[in-house]
Amino acid sequence: MGKFIYGTPSISVEFDDRVLAHLKVVILSKVRRGESFTFSWDYTVASGSGHSSIWIHPTIPLQFDFVGSREPQLNRAWVEELVKLANSPAGLRVIPEPNEPATANR
Image (cartoon, rainbow, N blue to C red; front, side, top):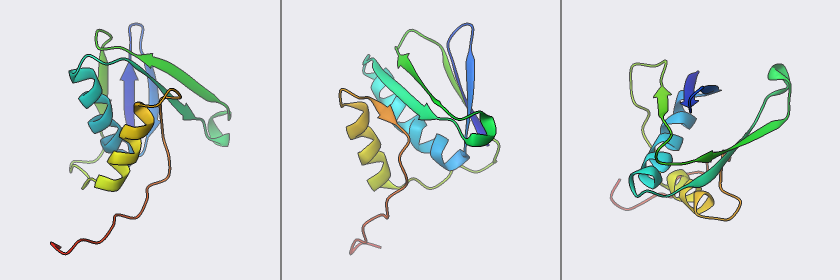
């Protein structure tokens, strides 16, 4: 389980490395463009249930810590869905990974 660390004082939220890699691409692309947005996630029953939302802003420190030594291969379809969510009024949230459409170039 990797960690998303945000703010000062910081909050730390655990995500599977694969999920975190996809979130990193989306979050950094928006922050790089100077865009602010909300990011929400659900807690597991083991960690007390519930959910949280934060306001992502380019001036607030953020960090992505991965446990694994390899970068997961990205699913383009998932990144595109996460980008759509990040650009919506409701903001970015973790959704299940969709199947990547088969292409003729594979």
